[in-house]
Length: 135
Image (cartoon, rainbow, N blue to C red; front, side, top):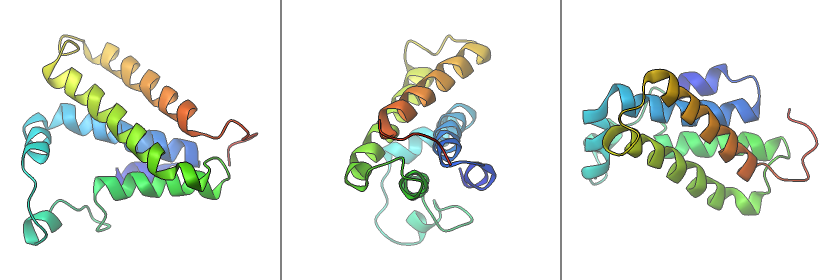
């Protein structure tokens, strides 16, 4: 997620990069992904270990991507919390369907197509309808 955010050339790409990294991690590290959602350590060293190089956890990195959209005038500040819930729920749902559900039989190309379609849909649902151009 951190690498994707750093490479993103626009706020829209930053949002897609975070979602892409989330689902890719789930597919590449299914055991760790499942563990992360079945074990919620209290504040302390174990929880801090889940943070990346920047010290930000996945939810904070998603918030950072949404902040970029907001800075570019593509996300109304009042919609930030709802946008975060929408994006996280959608990518987590896809990851779960791929790992343990009816999408587990998809080949890698079809998984990628589903992911990219979902990311476009998330973006369309989050970006303000009055936005005229990405920055």
